[in-house]
Image 1 (spheres, rainbow, N blue to C red):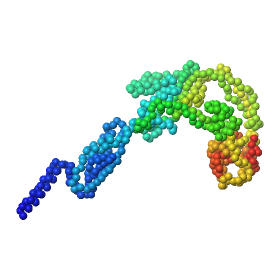
Image 2 (cartoon, helix red, strand yellow):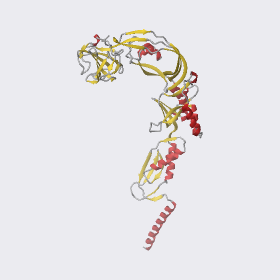
Image 3 (cartoon, rainbow, N blue to C red):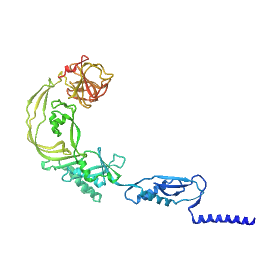
Image 4 (cartoon, one colour):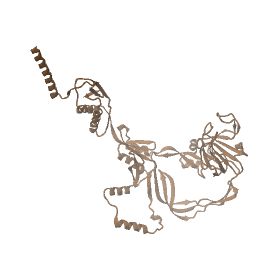
Amino acid sequence: MKLNRKTRWAHIWGLLAAVFVCILFFPTLVIIESKGENVFHIRLNGTDVGVYGDRDVSGLLRRARLAAARESADMLLADTDIEITGEEKWFGEVDSASTIVGNMTAVLKKSRIETMQRAYTVKVNQYMVNLGGADEVLNLLNAVIGKYDEKHEYKAELVTDPTRELNVLTTHVIRTSEAIKNAKEAAGYVREAGAEALMNTAFDEIEPDVELDFSDYDQGVLTMDFADPVEVVECYLPDESLTSLQTAIEQVTKEQEKNKIYEVVSGDTLSEIAENNGLSLDDLIAINPGIESASSTIRVGDEIIVTSPEPELSVVRSEQLYYEEDYDEDIIYLDNDDWYTNDMVTRQQPSCGHRKVIGVITYKNSAEAGREIVKEEVMIKAVPKIVERGTKIPPTYIKPISGGRFTSGFGRRKAPKKGASTYHKGVDWATPVGTAVMASCGGTVVKAGWASGYGNVIFINHIDGRQTRYGHLSRVLVKPGQKVNQGQKIALSGNTGVSTGPHVHFEILIGGSQVNPLNYLS
């Protein structure tokens, strides 16, 4: 019995000694209380990275990412597929946090997807291009300017766009001399100050105004800027997403065909509109469904599609130039209240004059967009054309649109659509949405808005007691009570109300009843 007791105590002391040795020499070997899963095996991207005493290893992964990123100058993207398997143990050996972070870092570097380069995305309208640096962005922008700035007097700068919440850059075009001056001031150079600045300001204020001679005007580019908004955003992209600078310059500066809308003005002809926009007459007719042939009538206010080649990024500039030119005086009209508006007699034939001019010409790319005369000296005075014309509106009616396809006449018909009348009270011309609709005769607008069946509609009362109506409009351009002239643009055609397709519905009423409009159109 004594031997058994001694043996038992020897076993107990031996066990305690073993525990003491484990604690002393194996600090990572811990006694773990029974609380369910308390040892967690961690696998990252299919590789064992350690055993941890907590299921939440997000902090360790974050440290590993930072460690991997610090070893690369570029942005690192890597797969992070974490598998955690838990188990309950009475005794277990776990790895230290630093060991697991080190193992994770090694796996991330092996699992790297791609290295992203710092880049800049340039956006102009719907066009975007990715470049490898801010210097390439500036080279691109300056290449666009340089096409129209032979003397290199202007340069582009990138500035923060104050209208955007995010860190988006935009452009500012500045004179090179001004940029140099600003750089010097930023480097510590000081503007004139004190008494010198005060004296210069005083002399500027008291200097008398004198008329400048032609030689006193500087000639050349006055202003330059981009015609389109430019957005530049810093980002990180893979190498294959970047465009070379030379390719980007070619893409941005190459002229491409783009449809533009031209509004007809007095004196225009189809052939002149085509020629001024670099088109053949056949091509102009082909791209305008409402123009049937070269003999089709066009009126002031008609909108015609013209194709104009433009680059992705356009430049607007103004130049001050000296030139001599022949010129015509504006026509002088003498109104005669006893004549109708279609009565006109020339009372004096014109002759052109000749003058010297300092003018400011505005260009968009290579095309002239406007001209303003700053100074002129007339050498031969022009003689104006004098025309006497009537002001009374004649009791005549004209077709309210140019072109169009006649689709429905006046009178009984089979209803083309549920809800439409079987007795057509006007006539219809099919025409694209947005075609200019003109007043058939001058008068007073009495209704302009929505009417059941008509959709958007305009009613006009005329001096002979008749009324015209224009239905299914997309846009109304006049108001009730407004006076309109014959041929004046009053609306745009549409497809509103009870309608089978884009067209203009036109009525003439006499004594409050509809009549066949075709019997009254001149």
